[in-house]
Length: 192
Ligand code: GLN
Image (cartoon, rainbow, N blue to C red):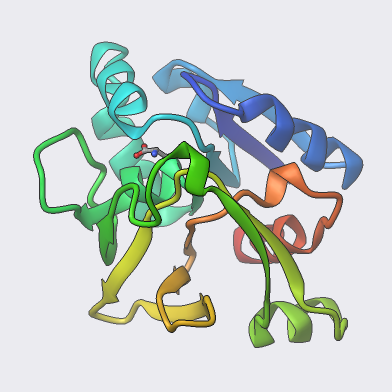
């Protein structure tokens, strides 16, 4: 199995380190040809407007959309914004997932926080019982899911922070910034 990490901007290095811990073959994706022969792609956190502008400049928009029609893609934070269909404002989006996302929904940088999430699918897939410790940094929320997208996790007040639609995954938080590899393992099961 070979997993790419979109390496235009943001914390792609942390995702690569996590995949290496899981002994997965990885490459940094910067050009359309880097998508060839990949089983899945992670789009990291960072700044979704910057990632979008660079993806346009590097002619990656169409190749990424095509890749996502057939292969697993996981967007974390800015990546979740970038793969969504609707964010209520104009910036380059892949529009792959039937989710409506609101950027910076928890407030400013100073309002970043950590919390434990009960994610039944994750526990079941990895045969574990522990909640998942999630790190939110100027995070978006998933306002709503539609089509066959389903909610994977919500914070205590009910706001959605993780969703899945077939082989597509979106998380508002940053699993690459913790020591817990379970979310990456879960994504690998979708890419398999
Ligand atoms: N606030 C950023 C955005 O809107 C996302 C933050 C992050 O990826 N940690 O793109």
